[in-house]
Image (cartoon, rainbow, N blue to C red; front, side):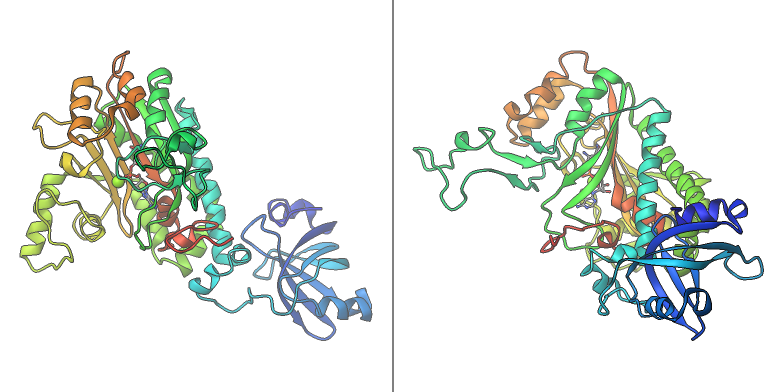
Length: 467
Ligand code: 4AD
Ligand code: MG
């Protein structure tokens, strides 16, 4: 049996030969004495047109094929006929066919256009539509691009734990993991929950980031990266937040913020080029039906420098825009966290390209970021892109034990919980930096699809954890 992808790849050699294929029916057209079955097997974006002929197959078989429903799994054997004068380069003249699995007539993925909202209720079938087939292939190829980018540069891939006792971001947005009976929690003498009876003997959570453990490895391998699922119990019902998402987190030893940004910019450009090279049909589809101008925009991004601005300068730009009449839902002033609307203004209307915002106020960033000499800002760099806002969050890490200890104390965090992290600063804890790329946000950026629910195979968002 051949895949449809291999038919397209080897059409010249296979022309005139008998081949077998199997796939799912996208449409069936009956012209009485002959008919067309459009088949897709997922191996590539393109379909295969199968020609069924009443005379060749006989009445019984012909009528049986034509009576199949969209969505059925069928296999065919036939002659691959090259058709250089038609839009498609070849078709299969069927000699025989087998119903591998029939499809009920109420198959929800009919040929007509369906809303994304409806398709989200069909997570088990939506990957058979053009849109989702394209999205999930790009997702797969982009993941490979990320691995290849880091592997080519000698980074070691490290798997960090999913269950953890520490809050890497210190934001308290974690999903609790427990084996305790929630209806009958064991209590200590003073009335608190007795976590010593829990599975790990202490409270644990699903990880919000693999960074802290990646740092351990960076200080023994030099350059490392993680690429794994992360979980956030953020109660934000937006088109760019999910409760379960994948994050790419490189960590580089002997590296400062400048080197960190260079790595991030190179990685994004590499992923763009790689996907455009490997997924031309999918990208053409997005360019035509999802986001007009996408390809040209990405090509431009891949071949020009990202903008850079400090938080302080960015706030000035936003304040000036405000003074000139731009209305933000959240007014801007120095010290405020940048909201999506601010990020999008900076990258879409002001700089009109991907933009690094650096040196944020310490008060709005995580405890591990390196304090700048001004004593108020930290060596952080967020990368903002048009259409999405923040796609990457990164920083140079605080390598000075005393400064880090003071910060942990200032924030009222428990130093005991971070003892390994602090320890690392005592034994050759060098300058180092890293960042986190939200992988779904990258897929959104690459495809022009504007909702994170449509780039996750099985999205988990507030109130949604089906299937
Ligand atoms: O900015 P964040 O919170 O940074 C970290 O977690 C650091 N530990 C990364 C590091 O330095 N190693 O998250 C990084 C990125 C964001 O820029 C965003 O793209 C994505 O992760 N992200 C989310 N994506 C989808 N849904 C959510 N709820 C997300 N939260 C963050
Ligand atoms: Mg962030």
